Structure formats: structure tokens, C-alpha cells
Length: 250
Length: 329
Ligand SMILES: Cc1cc2nc3c(=O)[nH]c(=O)nc-3n(C[C@H](O)[C@H](O)[C@H](O)COP(=O)(O)OP(=O)(O)OC[C@H]3O[C@@H](n4cnc5c(N)ncnc54)[C@H](O)[C@@H]3O)c2cc1C
Ligand SMILES: Nc1ncnc2c1ncn2[C@@H]1O[C@H](COP(=O)(O)O)[C@@H](O)[C@H]1O
Image 1 (tube, rainbow over the protein chains, first blue to last red):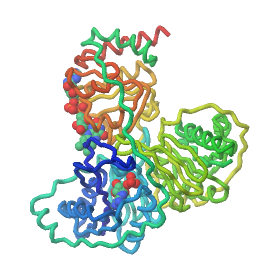
Image 2 (cartoon, rainbow over the protein chains, first blue to last red; image 1 turned 120 degrees about the vertical axis):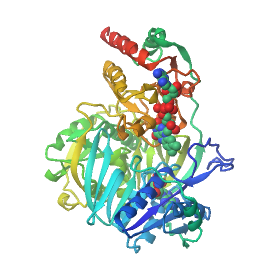
Image 3 (cartoon, rainbow over the protein chains, first blue to last red; image 1 turned 45 degrees about the vertical axis):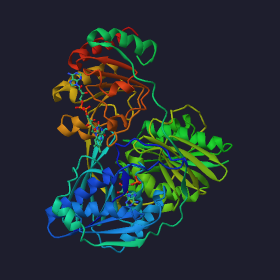
Image 4 (tube, rainbow over the protein chains, first blue to last red; image 1 turned 90 degrees about the vertical axis):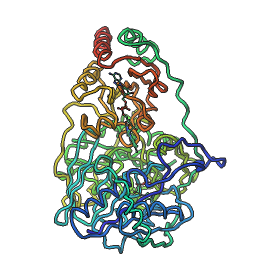
């Protein structure tokens, strides 16, 4: 199969964040960046599908400045065959604009399957994949926790709140990947070496109008410091009293 | 004066809580512009029109009813096409959907069909002149981003639990609308629905959550968490990734950065260390209780009330005490 996987370069999710002096972005000094978590599951799913199904091609796409080349190389070191950077100085916070840039590029790619993360760690938005599908006019399954492809059709599982849905759909399709499908592999030394020689093309991103902009960023208010009320079963009566009188939830 | 179109989400022809929250958010937005109308669109199998009255109670002026025998299950393609068609036909300022599984699927489609901007997971929104300003938690809830949208029409997807359902009775009209696409032509087809247990409260809707971690030691000990949830009566049971990875609980129960993000009235963390990725999914809960045998566990830094102790001993005693407190009401 011909599979595209769209990956975003995002800061390590374990980082402690600070707001930049401009107050409209985070301070990037000292942060480590990598493929965003859900997109890294998408890369793994793409690789496994092609390993299982025999000859195919897996191509990674990233919209962003030259720093995304490192992210694309990482995907190639995991086993992706080639990569495309859609170049822009800064990735806008406007998910539909990013989707337009990807759709313009993927339209003529002849892909059977195009994979995304359920949402990117930084925006936590869940827009780009589903919007790209709509722009391309292909089937779309959002937040899949299982995915199988056979005879030109896909089957996926999705968790609605309290209920799981099994859906079937024709290819070509866009699927956005939730957690639980696959753990991303670590690149092997051989993978890292060969990634250096794999093709990485760069083309300008056709973002169109950007209509969503960041006005400010702030850290969430701190919770009051925690309080230990006691030890073992002896603390239960005090807990119940506090839940009744102070928290008023019982 | 600006009208707001809102998708009122249903399951099995019953309104979901997120539908009432979305209508509440839509009402507030319309009112803030000097009193526009709120139009709520519902889609389902014949009989769905019966929910109109309830939507009026929360501020809908008009309910757009899309009834079709082919809409018994959620059909994302038909709903997105119909919502977009409706948005195009009226003079709307904003389209509101919930940031639920259905809304996540519909919002970006509607935005792309209409070529209008969308922002998701909105916890606050206001309209001032030409701009819509929203707050949106990003970086797994570690950063609050304020965004400005400059467009005559935009889609806002609101975080479940962020807009408290309010009563605002309006005289409600109804209008029938044919689906803008034929359900039998949808590409994505629901083959099966797997119920997560009858009468089980969803994590996003439960006022109380009892969440268990590896400290519960074995899958069968989740019975203790379930007993406590049952004693509350309005509680759901969640888990950490350590637990879902072990297969003790299904992935859909996972709370945290890569699982569900919840903010119940009361969150009881039992045998959970409090890793940053877990906190990302629950630290906005109103009251947090933690039971852990390690007094230095990071969960105690965010817990309003912490008990240092063995969960296997403390839980049964707490369950009994909660039962008694409930019975005394
Ligand atoms: C990219 C990424 C995403 C992640 N996403 C998530 C996510 O969405 N959700 C999530 O939860 N995690 C997530 N994690 C994993 C997270 O880092 C932690 O590993 C996980 O939350 C730990 O789960 P735990 O608290 O159950 O287990 P542990 O960390 O093993 O903690 C068990 C706790 O139980 C206590 N304990 C043991 N026995 C007893 C007893 N008898 N009585 C009382 N206490 C006891 C111990 O003191 C300990 O504090 C993610 C990690 C990464 C890298
Ligand atoms: N700049 C980007 N370049 C490539 N893919 C992206 C980009 N932004 C988002 N994506 C993909 O879209 C998914 C959802 O992003 P979002 O809609 O921002 O939450 C991510 O997990 C990626 O798979």
C-alpha cells in the first residue's frame, strides 16, 4: 500500500513549560523536540501495515520550518521510505490552514491511506486530520484504536464515550490514530544510518488565509498545595467529614 | 445581535449532557451579542423531534429536526453535511459543537466544507465586534492559550464539563429539515456498537471518579474501586496507563495526557503515583483525594485530602463510610 503519515514536531511532553517574554508563545530554550506522541503511533501503524501487506511505500509529511527535517529524519530512521517538508517559517495555530497545505500536496499523491495523530501535543486540537480528509473528499475515521485493512477496505474501532464503534470504510481513507494501537519502535542503528541517505524533498506550504492567531499564552493557575490528612483506615472518618463539610461533595 | 447554530448531540434519540452544555454555551454567546437566536440541530431516527422541548429549557429558540430512519446510529457524514448546509442557509455568527467523540468528528468537517476557521476544546468564548476570542488548554493542559478568530463565521468545539448546563426557558419552535446527504451513501458505515456496560456512567459525565493505579496490585482488586463508585452512586471508574497497558482495564478507561481528560467534582486517586502525564488529565478536578502508601508520591502535591496507607485496607472502610453517609441523607 501507499501510505502517507503526517507528523508534527512538538516539544517533549514531559517538559516544564515557561511562557516566552512576548507572552504569545512558549519559551523554547532548552526544550527537546520530537514527533508528536499520537503521530508517532501513526508512523508505527503505517510501518506495521506495510510490513504485513508486502511491498508498499510509506511517506512522511511535515509542515514547518527547517527544524522539521530532523523530525522527518527520525521517521525515516524508524523505517519510513521518504519524506516531504512543506516549508513555512512558523506553523500557524489555524488547523484548517495546515490541513489545506497538506491536502494540496496529498491530493495527487495516489495514497491508499493517510494517517494522522488524533491530536497534536501542542495544539491538542484534533483538527488537521479530519479537515484534510474533508478537503480531499475521502473516507475518514477519527481517533481509531484499532485498524485493519483488507481487500481495499478498512475496519476500525473507535471509542465513543462509554460505547465502542466498529466502522467499515472504502479506501482511499484518512485515519487519525488514538493511543493503544501500537507502541512506536525505537530506530535501530542501521535505521539511523540509512535515514541519512533517504530522500527528503522541500516544497513551499500553501497555507492560504490564516484566521486563527494566538493572542496570549499563560500557565494554568496552581492548585493549592496538597495536604495529607492522616494515615491508614484511621483517617477515613476525617476524610468523610471534610468531603461533607468542606468540599461539600458527599 | 448574532444567531448561533448548535449541534445537539444525541445517542439512541436521547440528548447527551454535552448537548445541553453546548446549547448553554450557544445561548450565552448569542446573548452577549445583544440577543441573537439559538438554533439547535438534532439528527436521529423518527421520534427525535421529542427532544425539542428540553432544548428550549436551556435556551434554544428553534430546533432544526433532521429525522431519517437511516440515522439510528451516528452518521458523521450526514450530520456534517446537514449542519454545514444549515449554517450556509442562515445568517449565523458561530456554529457550536461539543468536543466529544461525535463533535471531534463533525467540527473539522463542517469547518472544511464551509471554509471557515475552527477552534476546539474551548473552555471560554466571547464575541467582540469582528473577533471571537476563546481560551483553549493546550500542551496537554499545561498551557492556556487565548486565541483570536477573525472571520464572519467560525466553528467552536466546546470542552465537555467546561460550560455548566443552565436553565433558560425559551419558547421553542421546530422546523423539519431533510438530511443534506443520503445516509445509505455514507462511506463510513457503523457495523457494530459495543456497549461498555449497561447503566455505566461515562468518565466525561460522572460527577465523581474513582481512578485506580498499579497500587491496586491486581485486576480483581478493581472491584474495591467499583464498590466505592457504587457507594457514591454517581461515580465512574478510571485508570492509569500503567493499568491499561497491563490489560487490567480497557484503554477507554485511561485518564491522562493520552487518555481521557476529566474534571469531575471529586476525583479519588487510589494507588496512583501521580505522573505528570496522569495529572494532565485530571488536575482540573474540583476536589482531589489520594490514597497511596508512599507519603512522597507526587499525587499528594495536588491532592486536597491525602491518606497515606494501603489502598487494599483503606478502600473497604471508606466505601462503608460513604454508604453510611449516603444512607443518613
Ligand atoms: C507519552 C506518554 C504518555 C502517557 N500518557 C499517560 C496517560 O494518559 N495516563 C496515565 O495515567 N499515564 C500516562 N503515561 C504513563 C505515566 O508516565 C505513568 O507511568 C503512569 O501514570 C503510572 O501509573 P500508576 O500511577 O498506576 O503506576 P505507578 O507509577 O507504578 O504507581 C503506583 C503507585 O501505587 C502506590 N502503591 C503501591 N502499592 C500500594 C498499596 N498497596 N496501597 C497504596 N498505594 C500503593 C505506589 O506508591 C505508587 O505511587 C504516559 C507516559 C508517556 C511517556
Ligand atoms: N504542521 C504539521 N505537519 C504535519 N502534520 C501535522 C501538522 N500539524 C498537525 N499535523 C497532524 O495532524 C494531527 C492533529 O493535529 P491537530 O489538529 O493540531 O491536533 C497531528 O497528530 C499530526 O498527525
